[in-house]
Image 1 (cartoon, helix red, strand yellow):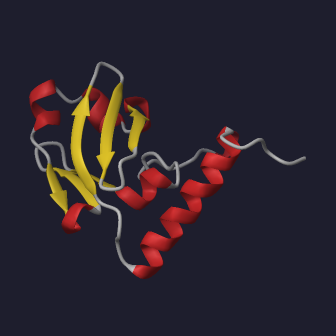
Image 2 (cartoon, rainbow, N blue to C red):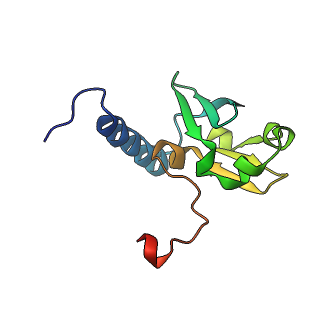
Image 3 (cartoon, rainbow, N blue to C red):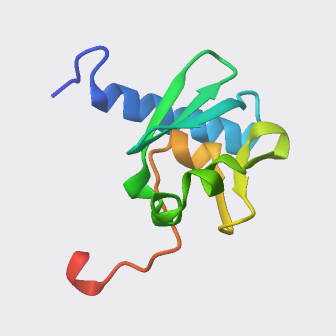
Length: 111
């Protein structure tokens, strides 16, 4: 079954493909700005897209205070985001691939 243009499946395939290109050939897309609302992290990209990422994907950010969230650094020329106060690092390639926190182990029951 083919996915309709503009569907989530097509976006996910496109994002995964973009993340592979970024990882394999250097970063051509970078993060330009970052903001938060109560439940979402919004990342504006250099190509004009804006990613909305649920804070639930990153428990440290979810538990952080607004002040801690606001103290971030762009790393790798915009290829990553770093919060020194909460020891959180997030790659743009991972966000584009739809990956959340990779530090938690998956339990056998969840597999």
